[in-house]
Image (cartoon, rainbow, N blue to C red; front, top):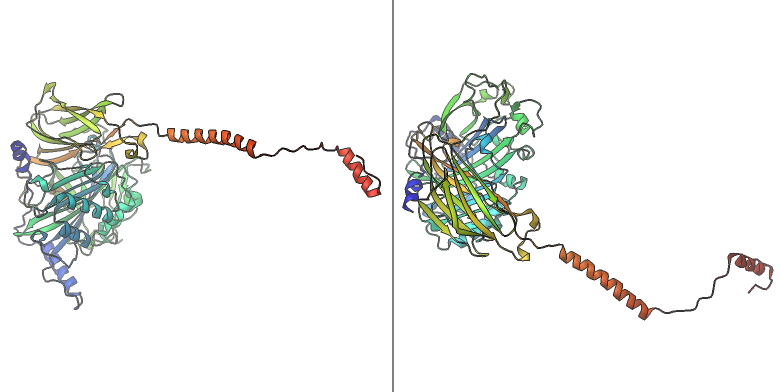
Amino acid sequence: MNVAETVFIDNVPTTETDASPPSVTEQKADEADHVLDTMQTQDFPPPSTAKDQFQEELVIKPLHSGDIYASFQFRTQWDTDFLLGSKVSHYRLFPKSLGQVISKFSVRELHISFTQGYWRTMQWGQPFLPSPPGAELWVWFQDTVTDVDLAWKELTNVLSGIFCASLNFIDSTNTVQPSASFKPLGVGNVTDQRFLRYAVLPREIVCTENLTPWKKLLPCGSKAGLAVLMKSEKLFHSSFHSQALHIRPVCKCKSTSWELRQTLNVVFDLHTSGQGKREWSLFKMFSRTLTEACPLASSSKVYVDITDNPQGELFELSPATPLVSQAVVLGDGRTYSVYDLTDHATFGQTHSLNVLLRWRAAESGEMLRPLLHGERYVAGYGLQTGEIHTLVYNNHPYRAFPVLLLDTVPWYLRLYIHTLTVTSKGRDNKPSYIHYQPSKDRLQPHLLEMLIQLPPNSVTEVTVQFERALLKWTEYTPDPNHGFYVGSSVISALVPSVVAMDTNNTQERPLFSSFFPCKEESTYFMRIYTEPLLVNLPTPDFSMPYNVICLTCTVVAVGYGSLYNLLTRTFQVEEPSQGLAKRLANIIRRLRGVPLLT
């Protein structure tokens, strides 16, 4: 445990300091706050200390594969302190529904994401904020909570209603309590893991009903600012879609404030979009253009990554902008063209902004080699036993670094922990820290955490065997032959940085570059997820009840019907019927009054 705390707890503290004097943007935000406060009625006077701030950003990054990556970042900071137990009745920019959740359940940090698709690291590189397929939720409660399990259960039900999701299916069978992973990202680096809960639903489907309540949490909704681009028809017609929400306490001006960060990441595919040529624009991606910034935002900017296009030889960007920003993102220095939406000159005479990227040269289709990459798959044959393989790649040419691997396996895959092996370059690689929590049938899943040292330029393979359990017939899903999902593995590491990271000037950097602050200048924190697994279990033939019902009904119908007819039917002697000629003759005889023929 000491090794894990030394590597990850001490190196991933996250506090945001703001000791610099207020900038011009902050002064404008304070003036706007004062104007809005004076517009309130006298019957309901607002509090005098309403100091909240809202920022919005959109990052557009051309990917190496020819696709394009769009990342929305919305941050709301509220200068209040729920940790002291004070009740807040006035809400301005911070959503009231989330504020009541924090106060009701004594939440210190809340992180939730809904993802459709899998992030292809070898083609797209690393995302700004990673998330696994499906729904992920991890929460830190305050140390004043006496029954964490009860608070966790009630919280998941409330969040299920807020986001119109199936989070109510989170229970003890898919909830774990990590011992070294998922440290707090806000102030107060609590190490008592009793107040941490983590769960993932890899089969959760993300659709419009999840996006609509997410957009309503924004101060301007989807009526103004960057949120007008979030058209459901376009966002879900993409290769990758992920929406997330993060709440954490941050340090600002020697006081604690709450930060709500809403992120939405989407990758548009060149081929599925139906475009005949490599040309992207805001209108082609979202079917809309930008006309104004959110009136409540103190900062509203659009960033376009031009790091690989310094002289404009790769693509042409229009309209041109003189603003250029440089930031350290994922350990690498990046250059961005900036469009400031708070400046009316940005929209030009048309009062509309439609950023256009027109390629001049074709990019190579070679695969990328990220410094840290992970994969996972299931091996074996039959429906009795199997083996889980996890591959962790360290592509750094000369530096070794440790990673923390977290695996959550459902209880119906019974792990043989004595078969656990870790190999690197054909040799055994003994983990320096192992935490294993065995499962209990229908009560809790397996939890496996390991701290592994990755040699430079190597592939580390982690294998463990398992046995499939036979479920009760009521525990199978409506489509049992589709298989059962196993959540993604979580890999956390301090990856060597390409350039030195400046941790002093956190307020001037873009939002997407400062979510995981780090103390050391030579490394940066990274969290990646592997693919979820789809495992087949021994499945009974659910068509047999149907066959038995059909056979039984047939036997009953034939046997009972025949017997019933024999017992209830009456037999009578029927005279032979007359021929047609004879009947016609009798008709004629009746008309003439002649006796009928017998």
